[in-house]
Every structure is written in structure tokens, then in C-alpha cells.
Length: 293
Image 1 (cartoon, rainbow, N blue to C red):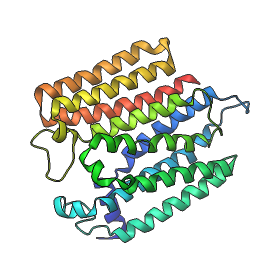
Image 2 (image 1 turned 90 degrees about the horizontal axis):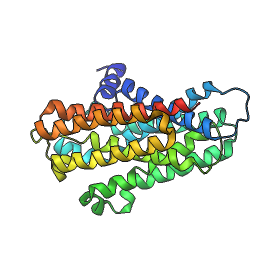
Image 3 (image 1 turned 30 degrees about the horizontal axis):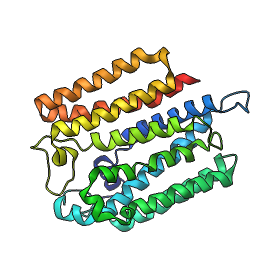
């Protein structure tokens, strides 16, 4: 298989670029809208061009997370999921290591070129990387986390607020009294992403694959997801205010109707719909931050 074809196959199976670009762009737009609304305007016009480097470094970080997961899961994948690209030999770990280094270097270069306060932005980047490195080691309590899936998510998803602080520095350095809102919003959303992608029917469960439905059962797993989606709706309302309460409630209601239908039907179609609708929901929430400017 030639170079382009094998990497195309890899991204198709493990890191679909188009989907991640849409997701990353929604995150960046959300941060862009929020930060521009809550920070004093130093420029007469809003710099929309900065969205481009913000999107690139965010995309690179998600790719780096995927690469590290390939290393973390390699032994388990070889044992339980040999059909994946790395265990079956399509892509070698050495190739992923080189790609990881390229991503990191690009992040540094873009940060130095595109940010106004380069030193602070690089510090934020390094803090995010340090946490990322600790996270990749299972916070040195890997055996405990393997038994407590929710604790693992609780710690892992701190990565997202740290990323938000770093990305925000492309627009404005510093944290104000309202920053907690976008940090909490991003933290809750990362929980939803993580849980929704691990919702399965009983027939879909695979040996060696940790899912919330396998661990808690479908009703309890969906209850956890719905509670977190409720928190997201509350935080979104806190940010946008009463002017947008109707679309907030309507979107939230539709999402939870899908969740309930999956609990009732317990079939593959609704399992997939839970994941798709959750992802559409979080994209809409991020994009709604643009309403602020």
C-alpha cells in the first residue's frame, strides 16, 4: 500500500479528518466568541483571521491525543482489536512517533508566530503538555483508574480547560471573573464526548473494550449522560441568558428524547443516534457562543 493510501485509511478508521475539523472549528469559534465578548476591546475591529492558527493548533493537539492513545492501547489492541490499523501493521508506532514530533513542533512555531504575548502562550502550551504527559501515564495510578472509569474521565477531561486557556491566549492573555464559564462549559462537553462515544447495545460490546453501557448498563449509562447534558444546558443558559432560553430548552429536549428512545428500544440505530445527536448538540453549544459578539 502506498504512503498516501495507508495514511488515508488510517485517518478514515481512527481519526476522520473532516469530522475533527468540524468539531475543532466549533470549539475555536466558541472560544473566540466568548473571549471577544468578555475581554476589553484593544482593537477597533475583531480579528477573525486568528481563528485559522487557533484551529490548526487545536486540531494538532487532538491528533497528538490520538497518537498517544495508540501507544497506550497497543498491547490491548493487539490482543482484543487486531483489526485496527496499528496492530495489523498498516501504520507503525515509529511513524506515529515522528508524526507526533512534527505536530508538537508545528504547535510551537504557530504559537510563536500568531500570538502577541509569545512567552505566556508558550507557558500555557507547556502546562497543557505537562498535564498531557501525566495523563498519558494514567496519573501514575493506572490500576485504580482501570477499576473506576468515571474517576478516569474526571481527571482526563481537565485537559480540555487547559487547552481552552492556551487557545484563548491567541486572542487575549489572562483570566477574568467570567473565564470559569467557558472552562466549565468545555469540561462538561468533553465528558459528553467521552461518554457518548462509549454507548453500545449488548450485541455491540467487545471483549476488552471499556464502555459505560458495559460497566453500568444502558439505563444507568444514559442517566449519567443525560445529567451531564443537563449541566451543559444550565451553563449555556448562564452564558447566553434568557434571550436564548427557548432554543436551549428545545435542543436539550430533543437530545434527551433520543436518549430515552435508546433506553426503550436498545438497538444499534438509537445507540448511534445517541452519539451523533450528542456531538451535534455540543457543536451547536460551542457555535452559540458566537451569538455573544
